Length: 232
Image 1: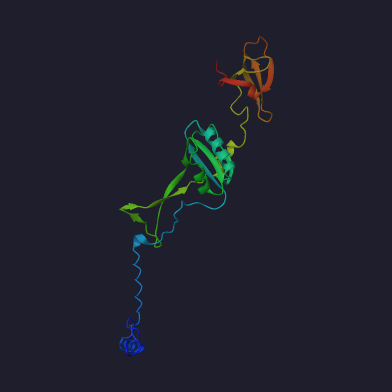
Image 2 (image 1 turned 135 degrees about the vertical axis):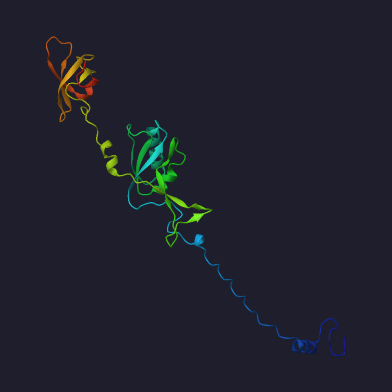
């Protein structure tokens, strides 16, 4: 043991006191200044349009492009998917006169766009491109090309309203036309149209080969037009 009562391997109390007095105080920590944010360049500025395609609020009527001849199959497949996954689809329409199109009424075009993925023969919703502009109204360009964003094309209801009303059975029949009876007791006979009743959707005809012209009234769907204008 040391004379001063120390343990030999540890400093004495006096030595610790002297070391504490001789040791310089630590310099206060100085917080480094926060780096300044880089100044925004024109191409980094926020644009007026969001990352998602441009859509309008409320119910919209959209046109889904399909493979020609597969309109009904696409409508049935997508309609079943919409019910199964509860997609916001209010109505579906396809018409034989409009080849390659299925019309969809919805309140959420983005959900519909996602829903048609994986539907066989579906091509995509009709859309067109819009130029993206920054907060100063200038067209945004990237790599020398104008940045564009798609917007879904909203179809006016008036464009399809005529397909919602069944066509009259006599709409394409006129007086003087030569028709063939396709049902009833005179099936297979040719006749000449003498009168058209649009209200009742009936026509009056006279058999072409009959010795005595007897007026026959029949429904429009029971005849097939052979010749227009009564020309033989």
